[in-house]
Figure 1 (cartoon, helix red, strand yellow):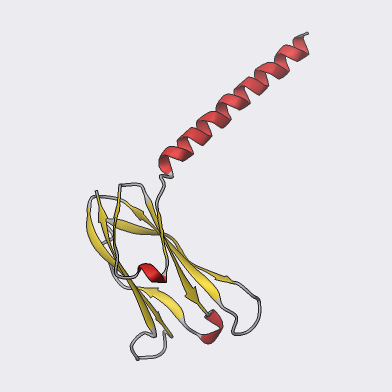
Figure 2 (cartoon, rainbow, N blue to C red):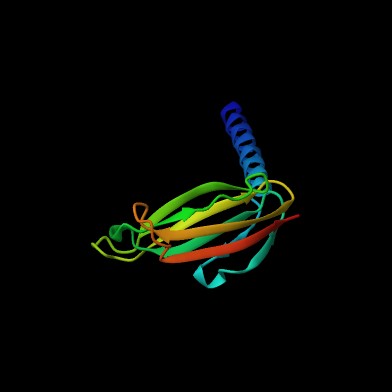
Length: 135
């Protein structure tokens, strides 16, 4: 009987701990917005704590990469990225680059991403721009 009560007490503590972890994570990981190339030029609104995920096509084997232009980091911060994923593990294969930003305080800023080869002085092959308003 003592062992059964001990096991039930341990399970109850674990259940409460799991509930609190899930609840805490849910509050700090508010939903957000996901954008792609088609959304360039948009204006989006976020609340403090929400995330903005930007997924852009890329081909890292060509030397091109997505670079972030300076932006107001007191409004939004880059929390992850660039994360580069290859769809197929072959030379010249297409992939994606992912950036995750998090809204940190009210204000407005513009995020501009440039697809270019870092060693070239030419204009970027492509750009992505979004205006972010944080309430």
